Length: 210
Image 1 (tube, one colour):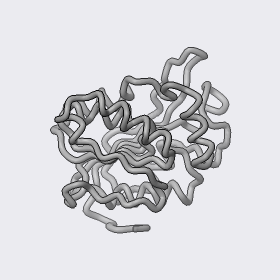
Image 2: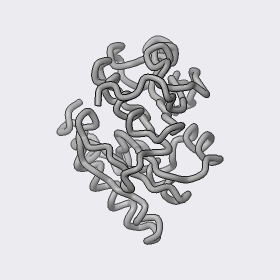
Image 3: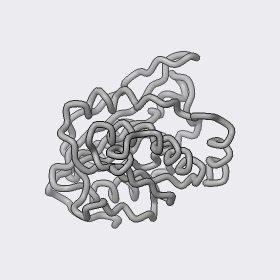
């Protein structure tokens, strides 16, 4: 889907992904000390806003202008202290400026349900890793390729899906993996199979693809 298609999708629903933050993000990040966070393909900002309420300074990027406008509108209802921690930007994550607000890199980067063809995905993941501070954390979560046959919802194009094993093989040396697996998510129409990888930036193999 291009930006215009996403704009239309966001215009047609009050909240495309709902208001609560992603459960796996909450489960993992609640115990983390707050710092600088990057949310790529942030949509309407549900995860960025949750992080900001917990003291994180968050940069959220999405190429749907409608999504960013909605994210800003929702954030405006928050206390000033939370609003001041949010920096929403409209842009294509393959080329957008990832610079953190303090210029020192990110402690946490999120790629949640961002599905791109493999070359673009590799580019974005490498750029996200490059944006992290030493020992910074990258969380990648999306629909597993097996979801086409064994789950519900999500894209049906295998070319934009992935598995934890593929991500671990591709980015070994760049990330030290803490968690990898296939969490199952209960939805109104059945069970969805996701792919989850969480890793810390390694000191080996710096700066690939910008």
